[in-house]
Image (cartoon, rainbow over all chains, first blue to last red; front, side, top):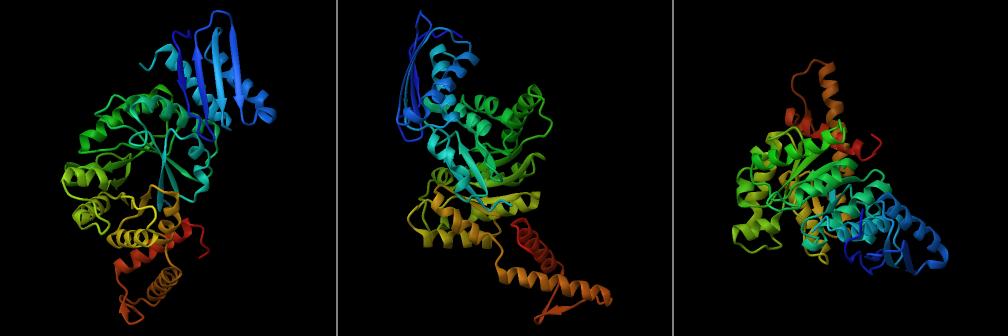
Amino acid sequence: MKINRSASAGTLESSDIYVMVEPNEDGIELELESIVYNQFGEEIEKTVREVLSDMDIQNIKIQLKDRGAVECAIRARVETALRRAEGADD
Amino acid sequence: MRRSMLFMPGNNAGMLLNADTLGADSIIFDLEDAVSPAEKDSARILVRNAMKYLNYGNCEIIIRINSIDTNFWKADLDEIIPLRPHMIMPPKVCSHKDIEVVEDYIKKVEKKHGIDNPVSIIALIETALGVENAYEIAASSDRVKAIFLGAEDLTADLRCKRTKKGDEIFYSRGRIVTAARAAGVDAYDTPFTDVEDEEGLKKDAEFAKSLGFTGKAAISPRHVMAINEVFSPTVEEIEYSKEVMDIIRIAKEQGKGAISLRGKMIDAPIVERARQTLEAAKALGGVL
């Protein structure tokens, strides 16, 4: 999948995560801000990279603002942002 | 047994997480009215992931899809059917043809994903035409296991005001129950929309039960416990039903054609009601 444009998904509500993606020419650039960064930062990043890998993304800038989302919500919001960036749901 | 069905907005990550802890027999993940058009994609992906990764235990999962006059409903089914929800709730069902349209597409998705166990349908009836066609909707397919009255849209269609007393939906309630029972499916009552009025909710639920509804939907977790209580058999009902079944057994043993209990003749409808009560009590885990 190719990231064609900027897109976002999710919210800043409790138990959710806000995801912003944009095209990038030089690999995966990931920025994570989380209220549980010290406890779960690594796990959240691992989950995000898994979704990127599953959707065959090699180049992307992705920023995440986590408000304590569980794994399934993180997966869902990243997938939604990626699909929107691809333009599939336009 | 399904007494309470609790609506949860499909795009709310926090609410989906705790859905099964609120006491409802069924959770309705809503992809329709609770989700803005710009977030339809997000909601169906979130619900799909929640169903895939979270364990909702014994809670039945129902998905309210968007209506067939939108561009969203097919994508809803594409995302959700592979996760095998217990039921699909199509809204604004007006006739058996609407059920056919939804069912045909469900079949295609099930076939594509090799799903042998057909998903059930609970038809949401919320238009004047739907109420008038309630029986043909309820009897339109083996997949239709229940019909559900949605009074908010219905009263808009009827051009009347929705009231707490509910006189304006009395006819529709009766027609929905009669149609459902004639078709051999369950009937579910519209939610009570005043979240603060617990006494009003109880009265409304008791009235729905008295009409023959199987259960009732809720839009607030605060309403679930009262609905469960109203639609569960009481201890007195269970005790009476056991007495009925005992005396019928004794009558058969003694070769008696007619028998009375507490001064009242026990006939076939009373026996059938007793059987239903005991069946419901058993389904709720009661020791009989």
